[in-house]
Image (tube, rainbow, N blue to C red; front, side, top):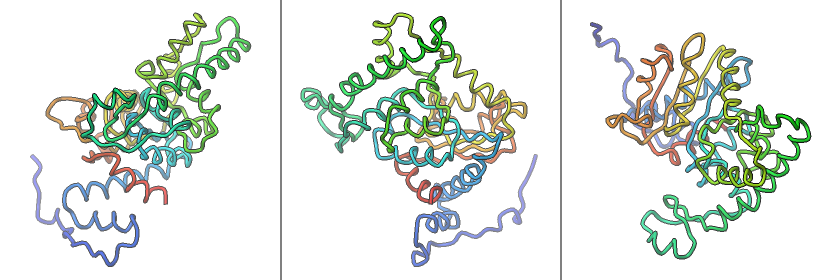
Length: 328
């Protein structure tokens, strides 16, 4: 059994000196020195992510980003846009709602609301509540149907003309995201930058959202239309088997987080080389959202010696702080 000595603990706790804080970076630096529980974790997460991002342009180095759609209904979408614009991450895993909100907000506005609003009264006015964000019907489903269905018709014609016999072989969510992003000129769009830089963005639960409904409706007009979901898995397989390093930032949990760590267990070196997870979920209920990264070590999804950290906190508060330093 390993023990400790007093010499193992030689870094003193320091008080904040606000006269020396001039920007977010200097604030986070002082958080690392001040201790105080989550503040220390924020500083360490910043350091892990900064090192990983510095390698993103290196051949054979994967830097994964996973996140839930809800954040894209808020201004936190700007963190992901900036990250992808800079190619800080080179493989993305997310949910169908990310496509929904990203396209909708490229054409319409979402509005500030409150968690305590009367949901019955909102529904009667055609207003939908997402936390403390209000989304009118015309700013979500209606605009998506109006915009996306014609795009799918164009994609159908293009692919059928190129390969009439098997037009949909290889057309998974990665190719779909690129096809949609190619049609979005708005530089505040995630899909715009995904397509511009040809960053693979995999959506394992592609049918679970409005875009999934648009795909289904298009198939009523074009019965041969389909999504080759295993084409995405082939892309991830090719990436993981050739990766010399693999790092990641996982926000929230669910299918997005799991898809990142799942594929990393198949690396020849078995597991991620560094990882940061941001979550508000507790560990005691056994959920993946609350599972600490040390649990993934037991599965071979993260290396035993890898720098890894779970930062407990709400992402719309944490990501702007991290982004102000990482993208400075």
